[in-house]
Amino acid sequence: MNYQPPRLIIVTALIALTAAALNAAAFTSIDELGKWLSAQPANTADKPYTITLNVPDLTGIANTLNTNKTKYVNLDLFGNTFTSIGHETFYNCASLTSVIIPNSVTSIGNYAFHSCNKLVSITIPASVTSIGRNAFGDCSSLTSVTIPAGVTSIMAWSFSYCDNLTSITIPAGVTNIGEWAFLGCASLTNVTIPAGVTSIKEEAFSRCSNLTAINVAAQNTAYTAQDGILYNKNKTTVIKYPEGKNDGAFVIPDSVTSIGVSAFENCVYLSGVTIPAGVTSIGVYAFGNCKKLTGITIPAGVTTIGIYAFSYCNNLTSATFNGTVDSRNFGVGHDKYGLFYSSFNGDLHEIFYATDKTNGTPGTYTTTTPVGKVSKWTKKT
Image 1 (cartoon, rainbow, N blue to C red):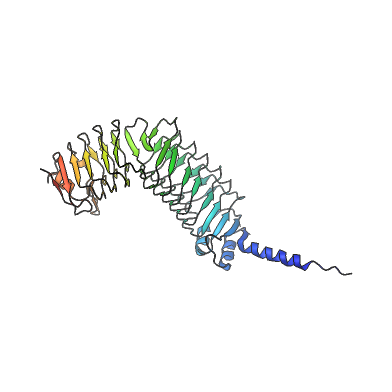
Image 2 (cartoon, rainbow, N blue to C red):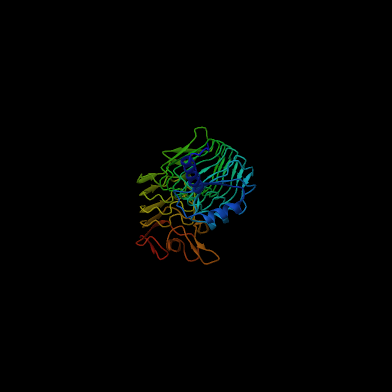
């Protein structure tokens, strides 16, 4: 008697295999991956192909994925043995939706994932000790990142403009947070600075419009936080005032002698600020784009005001100077291209200083058009 195989089981298995093949595939070369992707129908970001890639290195991966921009992929690199993801490896890979990095990797290079704007999740193994500058910049769909414990420095621009990044875990080993590291992370609501951080560079948390709480580990010897406002340990410098705080007017503590770069930039709810007499310097962009700020009084001890310190303050119509500022330190001038820079919008620098660039006299200066190069300021008599 001839044995008849169970056809239904075979057909069912073939259907399952075909469906799996459409959604998952494994490759041992990037060229092979490219040919396969080119043969597949277009898909969407919420229905990506799951790709397992086992290769000695990732040379050419960006070009391969960018050639197939409508072929969205989840990329699983687990099991590979290469030790680094180099400079611009996945730069502008708009088809990459998730990636699992193998635990052989110890470094992620500059711009490695920059502009991967469909990247929702990434698994970074504990083996990684170095993440380069701008590595995840402009990854606008990335929602959360856990930085491995071995990382000691968050480089400049690392997570800038990750618009949907809601949480970030900074490990205890980090000692440095670079310039613009989290610039423009508009969905980030709170951040904790570990005890070991001794350096936070300029604008590290600038334009984080929903950041309302900045916390510092109790044993941190370099920084302190009060009501979500970040200071240096002795509260002599304002590092960052959270842009999302709706506090109206704010009195800067008397201990403060310096207002840092971008300290109050984009604080659109700030309707007034009292600067204590001990302040001697106001940094670049310190109050830039504080749209509700109507007046400002500069104490007599201030000797330096950075460029753009009060730029784009749409309602700032009164500026009172209780002392004089050396014209060389007022933050005004033209660069070699003829571009104009000033602490305030308009011609206040020309009014505050005589035509021979000697120091101007104390007083209150007003304008009816506070924004733009054509703003004309006059001294109240």
